[in-house]
Image 1 (cartoon, each protein chain N blue to C red):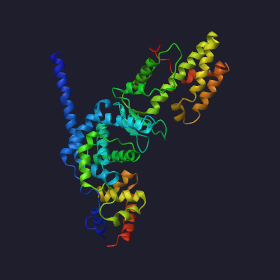
Image 2: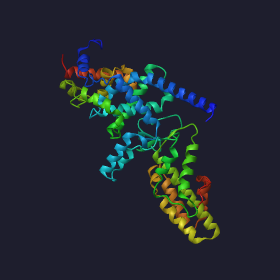
Image 3: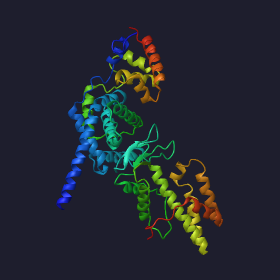
Image 4: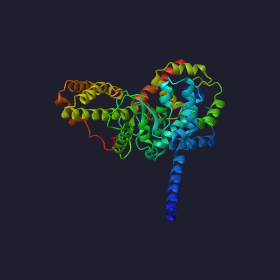
Amino acid sequence: MTRTDLGGAASARATADRETGEFEAAVVPLMPPLLAYFARRVLPVDDAADCLSETMIVLWRQRATLPASEGARRGWAFGIAKRVLANQRRGRIRQMALADRVRAEVRAAMPDSSAAAGDDDAVSVALDSLPERDRELVRLIVWDGFGVAEAGALLGIRAGAARTRYSRAKQRLRELLPE
Amino acid sequence: MHDVDDDPLILRIRRADPARSVDAGEGSLRLLLGDSIAAAGRPRRRAPWVAGALLAVLALGAATPAIADGVRQFVAQTGWIGTSPNPPGVGVGSAPSTESDDTEWIDALAPDFVDYAVSVLPVEIGLPPAYDLAAFARVVATEQQAALPGGGYMQVTNVQRNYETRARCIWIDDWLTAENAGDDARADAAAAVLETASDWPATVATDGGGIVDSNREVAAAAASGDRSPVKREYDINCPPVPDGILK
C-alpha cells in the first residue's frame, strides 16, 4: 500500500465518521419519542425495541433524503415508523439481539406487557370505542405530541378533515368520560 | 373552551398514556443506534441475530416459508415488505411489481445484489443444453443492476420475473434457430419448455393482464410450427441473448 493509498483510506474513513456523527446527531433526539410510539402500539411491548431498531436501519439506509429541518425530520421518521409498525403487525419484524438492552428497559417500564391498557381502564375503553382512524388521531396528538395537521398528514387526512375528526372524537370522549 | 394544556379530558388521556414511563436512557439508545447502523451496512449473514433467526427456522422445520423469507442474509434485503403505503426509495428508480405484491424490496445498489439475485433464481428455470445456468444467473442479475445506475429498489418478484423473461426469450431464440435449421427434435423440446414457461410463478404473479395468455399463444404457435407469431414475439419483447452464458 502506498502513502497515497493510506491518505485516501484515512480521508474516506474521516468522511464516513463525519457522516455517521451527523446522522446520530439528527436522529438520537427522535429515538425516545419513537420508542414510546412503538411501546404504545405493539404487543408484546418488548417488540418496541425491535421496531425502533428496524426504523433506525431504514433511516440510515435512506439518510441521503434526511430532511434538514427538525420538524420535517420528525414527520419523516414517524412516517417510516408507521410502516415499520404495519410490518410488525404482520409478523414481519424480527427480534434482534442488538435490541436486547432496550427491550429489557421497555419491559421494566411496562411490566404488565400490555401496551394498550395504561392504568385508566375507562380511558382505554373509551378510546377503543372510537373509529380506528379517530383513535389514532387522538393518540398521535395527545400521546405523541403532534399538532392536529401533522397528525392528519401522518394518517393521510387533510388538515381541515383532521380538525373535524379530532373535534368529533373529543366530543365523543367527553360523553364517555364525564368530568 | 379548554386549552389543550388544561383541558381535563386531555389531561386524563395523557395520564393514561401506557408509555409515559418508558425511558430507555440515552446510553442504551446510542448503543442500539450504533448496532443498527452496523447491521444495515454489513452482510447479514455475519450478524449475530441472523444465526438465532436461522436456528429458529431450523427448529420450526423447513415448511415455514413466511419465517424463512423473513430471514435476512444479504445487505440487498431491505426488510421492507409489500407496496403499501409507500415503498422505500420512491422517486429514485423504484417501482412496485404490482399493486398487491407482498414480497420484500431489494436494494439494487447493494454490493451483494447479484449474490442475492442468484439465490432467488426460480427453480423452474432451465436453459437449452448449450447454456450455463449459473453464468446466466450472474450475467442477468448484473445487467439488471446496471440498468439502475443511480440506484433503486425492486421487489423480489421483479428480480425473479426478469430471470423468467430472459430465460423464456432464450428458449424462443433456440426454437427459432432450430426451426430455421429444420431440427425438429430441438424445436419440439424448446416448444415444450415454452408451454411450461407460460406458467412460471413470477410471471403469473405479476401479470397485470394478458401477459400469461399472450405467452401461451406464442407457445401454442411454437408447438404447431407457426414461425410468424414466435418471431414477432422475439422481435418485440426479447432483448438479445446475453454474452458470456454459453458453456
